[in-house]
Image (cartoon, rainbow, N blue to C red):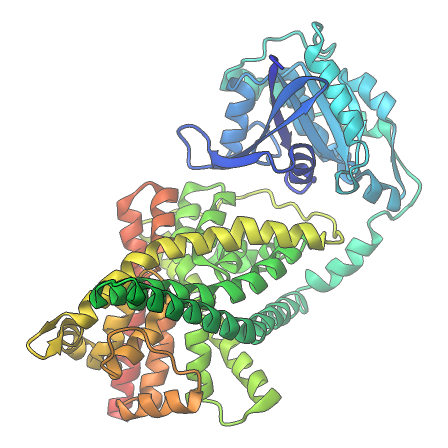
Length: 618
């Protein structure tokens, strides 16, 4: 098998391009970065008819006239990457819009195949595509597919094999495949009117109202009166399911991992390992890792699939539509609403998601402010404090009330996001809100199985891996500070005493400030570090009973004011190590990373000081 062909897989967003890619390449995939860029790409391989194909899944774009980093990466690969051929995936239910990109790619890459996907959805709407006529007008092969059910993919492979092995080029173009940006822009202008003409000749619709269902749903989801309330209800439900559903598996995982830690400890002791090494490895590094995994994994395993289901359903762009006015008034971009929502699962994912924002200025605003919404690593701390200090009712009513307060905390984070975005847009990131294209894709039945796999591999495991990478050294540091003593006092206690004046100034104490600093690798270990310090232990401590935990906190001077300041500072403080590393990678700048670190911390300190000062005056 000597022949190897590189094929560009292009298409608009939301046309099922990734489904085609996954169906063709299976597990023979890897993810990396485009050369010289921060945009991630996916490459996969498959064999057909004794030929080897490398499929490059380039970022979704509407046109080769690029704005965002992802669109530029797509354009550069098509114009300068010199692939042997291209597959342009189109949505059968809105072919005209998709043909705009297809015509441009055909002019650049003669050996192009147009894959009209989602043909099953189009048929349900009464839409029929004359693929023979479409192929004649485009001058390239056209294949009708439904990648979700693998329909037409065997034909696609056969046509691809025939196309790349052919010595002839497309009848649509005799131009050279490598064009510069100026030539590309000229071609874009020339093809502007052809898409509508071709679609008019090849698309027939039996149904007079093919999008009736979508429009009915949009009357609810995009209505000025109901759109935002429905959005808040949906996210409130997701938050409640995430928190309530994660408790039991988190407890089981915690017990299992800590039991395994005890087994490791016994084995090390029996093997004659010095006690201090056993303590460092198990009580220090392993216990922190176990804690991070047991607290992070269950909420992420619940939140990310539900979030991905909303994405697969076609609802996420409608969030951006509903909140576009708010963000535009703040000098930002409506797409920031999507990245902010992603931050509820993990701020690192939210920062990565900011690539969808075309304007570099607005992308920076979204990155810097993403940490103002709490990630799921901060939810357990906030909820525990709410339940202990602000809710006196137990059972279902108590759960509902705590959920309502949690939503209030999230709304506070959103409000501050808008305020800070406005300040940034009028100062160091000064500029007017840009216009952008926002596609509202048709509502689709989510593919639950694929959604679960995608959210688990692409988001949950990825984020957890980064968190563990940061948490392991933190476990070592915590052990050293808690177990090495000067005189009879651990270094940890000296640090707490040193930070106590600052803690008192903002309504907290030195132990809490120290716990946030040491919890930089992962927010999940802040409370365990506080308990370890209060109990003067040498390793992380867990108290599963809220009554017992409340008693310990009160005994160490906690009041309702302390609890309120703790919630505020948990909401507004520096990003975790994983998010900071992601910000540095996305911006390529230490300056913006430091600003992203300092800004939420400053907001948290100011708000806590105001709460503390108000309580002292009253």
